[in-house]
Amino acid sequence: MSHAQPLIEARQLGVRLGGETIISNVNLKVFSGQIVTLIGPNGAGKSTLIKALLGVHRVSEGQLTLAPSTTIGYMPQRISIDDTLPLSVYRLMTLTYRAPRLAVIDALRLTDVPHLIDRPVQQLSGGEFQRVMLARALLKNPDVLVLDEPVQGVDFNGEVDLYRLIQRIRDERGCAILMVSHDLHLVMAATDEVVCLNGHVCCTGAPETITQQPEFTQLFGHKHADALAFYSHHHDHNHSLAEQGRHIHD
Amino acid sequence: MIELLWPALLSGTGIALLAGPLGSFMVWRRMAYFGDTMAHSGLLGVTLAVVLNLNLTVGIALVTTALALLLFGLQRQRRLPSDTLLGILSHGSLAVGMLVLAFSESVRIDLSGLLFGDLLAVNRGDVLWVAAILVVALPVMALIWRPLLAITVHEDLARAEGIATERIRIVYLILIALVIAVAMKIVGILLITALMIIPAAAARWLSKTPEQMAVGASFLGVLCVWAGLGGSWLTNAPSGPAIVVTAVIAFAVLLTVSQIRQRLHR
Image 1 (cartoon, one colour):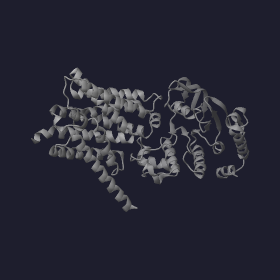
Image 2 (cartoon, rainbow over the protein chains, first blue to last red):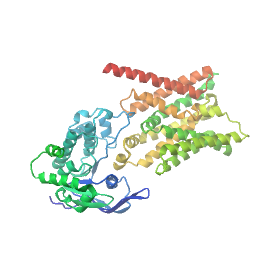
Image 3 (cartoon, rainbow over the protein chains, first blue to last red):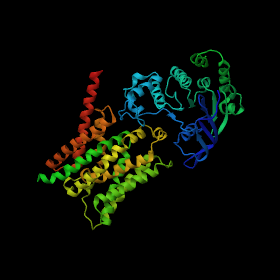
Image 4 (cartoon, each protein chain N blue to C red):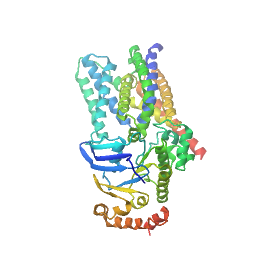
């Protein structure tokens, strides 16, 4: 892959919220066609970083550069919509962006859920809801997909499917994907670059190499590092994600 | 004698029309307590109007709007949980308002009328106030409808997608403050939020879209105001409780009907 210019570039980026420094000195580049995964413990500032990139939080220090006319599709952490709000999937998809029904169906088709278009959002299962939100993020045909814990609230098999789907979307559309994830094992196989965050960037690299970095084992312990090393070993085989996933529990 | 009822009927209708969409958002955004707090501060507005010799509606509108802005600012702090904060402001402003009114011997004010509404207190001037606010608030509501809905679903998502979330939220709060100011005479400060929330909650059972719920709430609200005022007129009951009881009955009936319908469809 030739990476001329990054779509998103953060240089020494810092965010303060309510007088408290949440992240500082973050350097990050996201290139077209690349899947970058942010990992890190709870409270490490993963969501904060993403929200700063999206313009939700103000950048308090450093620099944030987006390539000209870059569009971003955003899927926030699992959201719950109050039962009192009567809202169909179609309305959810078009809250801030008026799109004709056919365009919405097309987007839902990308995540294999076009039949849900008229369903009340409260009646969706965890997996269905995340697929709808993923389709929603894809609706504007973005250059970058930003996904904050896309598999939250999804059962294990669904998780595997969803990661595979995300990879397929990248392959088919060539967009960049920046993703926050908790489950190290599954996500590693589908990632080009891992950025490990804990208030600042601890370490970054390809999944095969990052587990050998001392900062990584310090943050996640040897257990995880070993498990992941095991996976990167199997990476070059032709195992399906589902099989890899099951190995973990052997 | 019936002509005495007209001002209350007209302004009550206008208020119920506005309360439909505003109250629906109050339900969706779980702001019932928030609305209560703003309504309770209305009593301070009465005090202000009396002390400064202002029009009553203007006095209330000033205080409720100021409180809306104050609450908006305080929401950013993280030291106090927001319901504690609302409790302090809500009961604090109610108590201060009562005390000031109790000690100012020069003014005689019908306290129970302020708290629970008095349809005979509504005059032509009040009808004009309601009309003026209706003319301003309905188009504004239509304008902020879609962005406010997006914020209600998920604030950060709306913001990431280019919506000026703070501006929209402030406009919404000011609209509530204004409606509270004109609704006080009819329903009373203790029951204003009921007129916003109960019709909206009742309309939920009949609605498949947010717009249906808002319009349904307006429609139900108007019916409740008419029935409540009629009942209050005939029985001499205070108008606020009469309207609210009607609304509660409507809610219970619609809830039962929807439950039965659900059973049948299963």
